[in-house]
Length: 349
Image 1 (cartoon, rainbow, N blue to C red):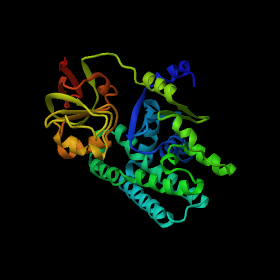
Image 2: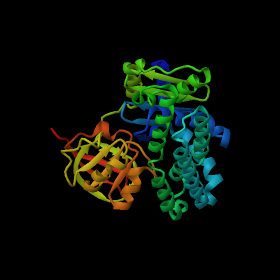
Image 3: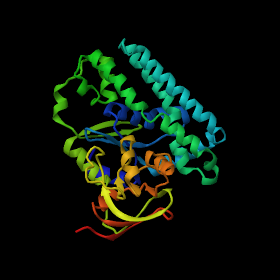
Image 4: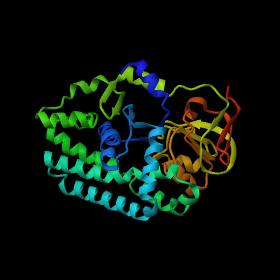
C-alpha cells in the first residue's frame, strides 16, 4: 500500500477501537472477520480494518462511519433482546472454551477448522455489545449497561486462552517454534494448510513491527519501517492545550499526568497521578486504583477503562485519540469528566 493511498484512507476518521495483548494470528482473524464474515451474517460490514502489532500487543483501528453504520443495524436487530444476547455470548464462549479443552491434546487440521467455525459463530455475537453501546441512546442503554459490562468482563480473557490453544495446535501441526507460530497471520496459516506447506521460523527474526490492512477485496501485511510510517500517518496530531473525549464516568480533578504504555514499568506512578494510556487491560487495574482519574486514546462505553472507572467511581475520559501524544509526564492537567474536556494547566519543563 502506498503512502499516498493511505493518506486518503486516513481521512475516513479511523479511531483506535481496541488494544490487547493478543497474538497477530488472533488479530488477523478478527480483522478478516470484520471485513468479510460479518457482512455474510448481517449484510452490513466494515470496508476496512487496520491492525498494528509491535511484538507485545495488537491495536485495531476502525472507521467511525463503518462503526455507526454497523451499530445502526445491530441496534435494530438486538435492542429488544439485550439480555438474551448476553446469554448467547456467554453460552458460545463456554462452548468454545470447552471444545479447546477437550481437543487440546489432539492437534489436527480438522480440530483447527472446527475451532475457527466455532470462533466465528461466537464472534458474530461478541462484537455486537460494544458497537451497540457506543451508539445507543443513553436512556435506552442505562437499564442494560451493567449486564452488558458484566458479559464484556466475563469474556475478557477468552482471546488469551484461545491464543494458547492455537499455539499448541499449530506448533504441533507445523513443527514450528512456539514463540513464532502466533506471529503468523491467519491467512498464512490457512495457505500453508491448504497447500500442505510448512511455515518457516527464519523470517520471523526479520521484523517485530507490522501492520495488517484488511479490506473486503484484499488483505495486506506490511512489515517494519513501512508499518511504523503508516502508524505515524494514522496518528498525526496537532499540538493543543485542550483535549476532548467521551465521558465514561463523571467528576472533576486536577493532577499530574503520567503516561503509561507498559503497565509492567510503572515504578514512578504515584497515588493521585492521572493515568494516561492508549487503552487499559486487566493488568492496568492496580494503576487505576492508585490514580485520581483516567484518560485514554481509544475505547468506548464497554471498554475496560470505562467499566473499571464506573465500578471505582473514578473520573474517566476515553476516546481522546491523541492524549498519549499531547500530554507529557508531570503535566498539570484538569480532567473535567462532566464535560469530557481535558485542559493542560501547566506543562512540565
